[in-house]
Length: 378
Ligand SMILES: Cc1cc2nc3c(=O)[nH]c(=O)nc-3n(C[C@H](O)[C@H](O)[C@H](O)COP(=O)(O)OP(=O)(O)OC[C@H]3O[C@@H](n4cnc5c(N)ncnc54)[C@H](O)[C@@H]3O)c2cc1C
Image 1 (cartoon, protein in one colour):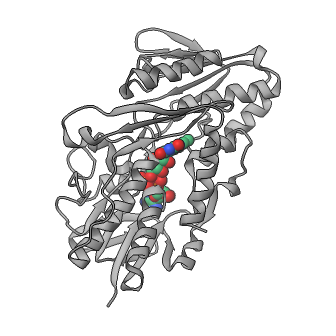
Image 2 (image 1 turned 180 degrees about the horizontal axis):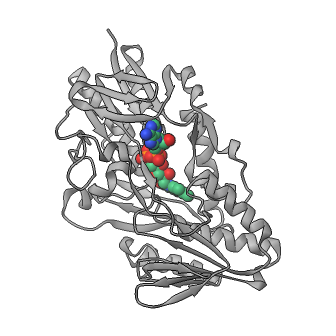
Image 3 (image 1 turned 30 degrees about the vertical axis):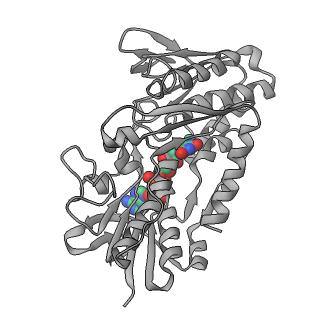
């Protein structure tokens, strides 16, 4: 009988894990991926949709493509996880497994404002595109509702891309762009080198940064901070706050703080050894950033851990706890990188640096998008 591997979530972590395990074990395993959506979306390209560089169909691929790779796809909503009985309840019935990989991501909390212009979803990206089309000049403000959202660098990228778009539209002279964030400097936890470089880029684009800004109220076209500061806006791009996926939060995998409890070396559930949890849904509790690159490396790594379980001896790629993100500012780009080895070991802070800066760095992001689809879902 084939070993049944069930993957919940076809985002970054789940898609990588399903592909890797099928590649490593071929016909010895039956790999099934469950997602509520029919399409895998490449989230780093949402801002490109907002700015008209991509149409939705260019940044997504149907999960049905996975059948060509020998991976079964079931479109269904996961309703609950029953790890004591190796079973998952979904909208189309129960599914049993021998091994379970959970990569269900995070989910947005309701926004404190009416309109969602944040390209943290395809819907938000398309709303922002419409708003920019109608924008005739004024003040655009980009900010975050909380510290917990996927891709910490993305708000700065989005502000940079909007700045460039307004230049192209010919209304930059009539517009102001400002960014607010809880941190005192952009990406402050990554250290002064990265923060300094991003500040330099924002200044070169005449984008004002408001640091240590904790928003508490949004009224009459103004956002008010806890310390009394106020910023007026004509167009507000507010990144929602996110929480670990509800199904996981409410499952026996979760600990008291709502995050699933896993071994820090293998991402194996501490109570259910045939269950692994990776990606944004768990990384907040491991002090790892909610970033696709981390979910990607975890996906490859847990596939190897399962192969090791099944074959007795298999040393795959070691988990590489690095986060890197090409920040595309429209007419400039930067590639910051951080290693989280010391963070995972509990011995120190992330060690970070800037790997590259310049217009050409944008090309690497565009090439990566093509590589992503070609190697995983085409
Ligand atoms: C604007 C933006 C830009 C970004 N840029 C970068 C970048 O440049 N570099 C980088 O490293 N990261 C980037 N990221 C972050 C990256 O996309 C995420 O960190 C990554 O996708 C997380 O992977 P995951 O597998 O944990 O979750 P996700 O990719 O969010 O996948 C979760 C999947 O689970 C499915 N799902 C959820 N609940 C259920 C349910 N109940 N039933 C069935 N299916 C369900 C969802 O449909 C989804 O497909 C960016 C994110 C955004 C929003």
